[in-house]
Image (cartoon, rainbow, N blue to C red; front, side, top):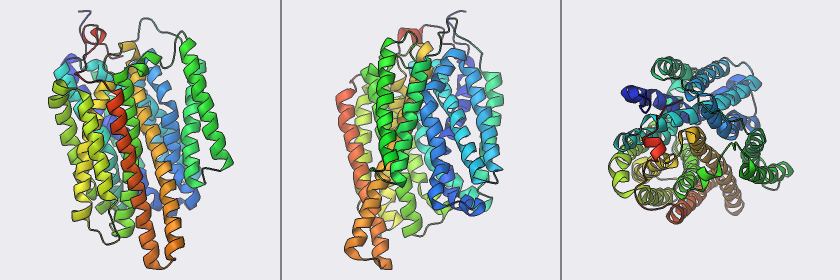
Amino acid sequence: MPHQNPHHARRWAILAVLGIAQLMVVLDATIVNIALPSAQKSLEFSNESRQWVVTAYALAFGSLLLLGGRIGDLFGRKRTFIAGLLGFAVASAIGGTAQSFGVLVGARAAQGVFGALLAPAALGLLTTTFTNPGERAKAFGIFGAIAGGGAAVGLLLGGLLTEYASWRWCLYVNLLFAIPAAVAAYSLLHTVVPEHRPRLDIPGTITASTGLFALVYGFSHAETTSWGDPLTIAMLSASAILLTSFILIQQRSKNPLLPLRIVLNRMRGGAYLAMGLAGAGMFGVFLFLTFYLQNTLGFSPIQSGLAFLPMSAAIIATATTATTRLVPRIGAKPLVLTGMTFASGAMLFFAQLTVDSTYAAHILPGLVLLGVGLGLVFAPAFSTATVGVANSDAGVASAMVNTSQQVGGSVGTALLSTLAGSAVTSYAVDHGTSQAAMAAAAVHGYTTAFYFSAAIFAAGAILSALVLRGGVPQLAPSQAAEPVLAH
């Protein structure tokens, strides 16, 4: 039958495979954080170099996502997905065996490259596999829960592996995800290559990739130097010029890398905006709350990872309920708006922390509230971001979701780190450098970051209210009736 989805009978098994791939990509952004001190001791690199183990992954992943999404659209998502999984596994194995800092950073960058193939292909396959609105809601709820909770799972897994095995297992563990997922994907998915394969938009690809690279690099460099540093200014200026050029090229291109109709749709554009702002606010929490738990409260890496589990549980419960029960009735807008407001409230709660605060009274309630908020943002935003997109554009529309989250996370981490650093310095100037004063200065830095994070989520609530449309999103006829062949 020409109009039948070949993946329908296997859709839940396919969801499991896609979920494993998404979990691997998301947790890899945080799993290495906890292993960094051990890796630094083992390979003997400096504190200044340390951030490149994290940044190399973010740079490659964030700058190549749009290209990765389009490759899936052009050459088939099954091939792209499996290539991404196997490449990610090989890069992880190389990183795990690294005997030098350069090899480790190179392997992390390679993970980012293959992650940029993998993540959009996974979401594109999900979009084209689940076409029944009720089942689609459930599938996106599960996928959104993984996207929101995966980073916290990475912190726990990183702590367990570092403490009981070796920091190298934070990289080797990807082999246990990627290889079984690739084998399952090979047997479950159909290979369908589009009949009309347009040419790749080379000028658009170059300007988008280099523009996003310059943006993420500029913010990362500002974090370790200053906003007035010549290289920071040069990179952020280059990014503005390149991304403006990219938009102009997309308006004129016959085969655009990112058709502007995808972004200019208010529901999709609003979903990308929500993902970007949530990423900016969320990554700061993992960073500063982890510092607070370990440096101020004296938690071990495993205890820190366990401390985030209630948040993960709240995300999973909320995300699956939101998309199955609430989105079909009231649409995404009220949920995203409520989620942003809850997340902002959680940040204000964290901003009250002191040197003498306790986990149960002063952190746990905020983590649960934040989990509910993120669950209400991520799952509806994921499903809304790809609603009504033609199958030929599903990959690049999916890539925009990940790009928004990744770039938002990079920008947010750099911005909040700089603000926290300035707050610590000014506090030390006013209160001296005794041990007690420095402990209080560190907490003052964290709480300053939380206040700004609250402002980011509050801005997310306001912008979501202005941009997103009310009502329940409908599947496009092309998604509902066409042969929704996952390529």
